[in-house]
Structure formats: structure tokens, C-alpha cells
Amino acid sequence: MSIKVVTGRGGVALLACALALAQPAPAQGTGDGFLFRRPSATFAFRAGYDRALAGSDVFSFVTERLTLGRGAFSSLTVATDLSARLNDRVDLVFGASYSGSRSRSEFHDWVDQDTLPIEQTTTFARIPLTVSLKFFPAQRGRSIGNLAWVPARYAPYVGFGAGAMWYRFRQEGDFVDFETLDVFRDKFDSSGWTMTAHGLAGVEVALGPRFFLVGEGRYTWARSTMRQAWVDFDRIDLSGFSVTAGIAFRM
Image (tube, helix red, strand yellow):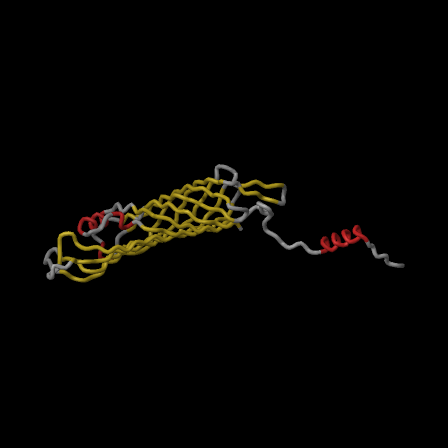
């Protein structure tokens, strides 16, 4: 049996096509604006501002005596979320965030024997670890057969959750003994874990098949018993309202 070599323009074109088809196609996770499968999870990083409510008597005590306003306990915040898709409208979300302030102050009406200000530093930190359910009122994407999934441009959501929060309220520096009027140096610390609950609302804005922007507002409720030197005070108010924005990745 003999082999014939095909020549001419047509033969070259057929040979090129055959070689191209013979090459293995590289594995891909995305197409032109779509995924080859519906995502099963997302990871998000957010940052923003957390306004502490600072509504309990310990905050009233320190703001009345020191050059601190209630706004001193609000701060920047950072957060991460890992979401598992339960169905087309619901996600289970595991989250962690941190917000913390550190403010210098002095007594309003008192100075030391050298007429120098009596100064101290106040630290207030909160770290909630939470589990949430997020509900999407509208479809956040659509499937094309069994081979492709196209994200919606906008996907608003609401949700709620609960968890545990670690907090610290600390003052260190110089203080006045109001019985003897002596100035002394000390540190007053209260920290520990407490339960927390929250409600949230936000929106996801698609940047492409994998990445999207996320903006969220969240109200967090939490209170805890004051410890150590603060035992004469009522439960500390750890509640706050945060507004954050960030970027997320579909997996």
C-alpha cells in the first residue's frame, strides 16, 4: 500500500486543521464571561469603618472624666468571609473581623504637681467569629445547559447570624485617686469572650466570571460582663454598625 502526499493550498490547510485538532485542549475554569460550572463557594476580603455604639456606663465614666468622646471607640475594620453555596438563593457564611481603636487622653480638670497633664491611653478591640445565612432575593446567575454559568451583574442580599466575640477594654497610664488626690500609674484591663448576633445587607457587583466587588452594612449586637478592676460597672456595650467594601473570588 502506498501513501500519497497531498499538495497544494487545500492540502496544507487540511494538514494544519488536523494538527490543531490533534492537540489536547488546555483545562479551563472560565469562558468568555462565564464559568464552566456553577460556583460552590466564595472567599471575600472587606474593609471599612465600624461605628461603636459605646452605650454603657463605662464609656460614660471615661468620657466624663477624660478628654475622650464616644467617637474615640469607633475605628477602621477588616473582615474575611468564606461562603458555601447551599442553593441558588442561600449561602452559609463563616466570617471573622477585627476593629480596634487606641486613643490618648488626659483628665479634664486635673494636673499633676508640676502642672503637667495626667495622661493615659485607652484601647478598645473587638474580634467576632460568626456564622451567617445570606439570602439572595433575585437570581445571582443563570445556567446555560449543563456546561456554563453566567453571573448576574448585580446580586443584592440580606442575612443574619450569630457567633462569639472576643473583646478588650484597657486603660493604662496615670490616674487620680479621688479620695487622696494622689496621682498614680496603673493599668485597668477587661477582656474575654461573649455571644454576639448580627443582621446584614449588601450587594455583589460582578467584575467577571471569577471576581466581584462586595459592599455590606452590618449591625452587630453584643454585651459582656466587665472583669478585673471594672467589676463595679454594668455590662459593657460591644455593639456597633459597620460599612465595608471589598473584593471576592468565586471557587
